[in-house]
Length: 295
Image (cartoon, rainbow, N blue to C red; front, side, top):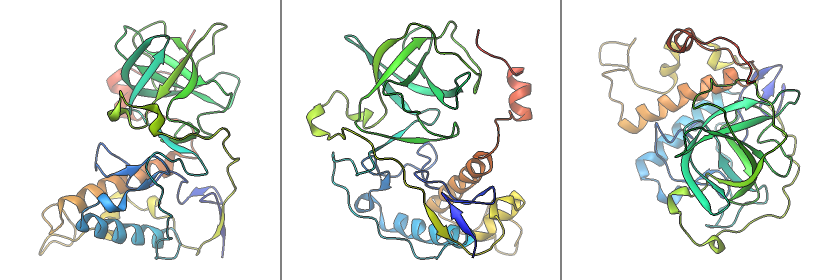
């Protein structure tokens, strides 16, 4: 029985902590609790619960884990889990940046490695001409991995240091340097749809715990996302009547199709998690991309 350390077995990433396969709100809008990063089971429709159960069980089996889902304690609204709030930082995440008396609405655009460090900055684009880079004011990294879609924070408004980029555009994953002068600000991606709201509704942690290393025994099974992509659907969806090689006109519900699209995105995240950033040929052709550094 091999041991998965934080979901990684011999360099193969089988799953990612705080990054659930269903967590792609632009594909499948599900009620998620930022208090602990889990689904709000009470707000799911019965058929959505069924899809989550079936797809999760299949994915766990493919990852060498027991099929049964572990129980998750209920986390009440406004109270962060002992590990902190789960803050979305994925590209496209709606956000608020507050500096001085101004609050700007916008979104997270991309992640950018900081030269000479193993950390990265977020790029926030708001109403102004140029976007802003932001790093955490407490000195903690947003995450250990620049591919991360979520991070743990102590409060819904996160104290940051910000500086304006010199132009409206910058290519994803471009390396940057922190300038000598930055401005204190606060970034929020949690419950932004509720803003403006009463900050007293939300609890906070004075200190985040050190993430525990998770070691779990798994069965020695092939890494499913290394299979040809055209075969993945056969684990999750039903084929067309009379055509076992296609699911497009098969008897699959919209939720099942959305769930499978999330699985495909998650496979890409698993594949990239331990790999350096390499732009796709389409990206290179569309944006005339070439490696660069911000001056």
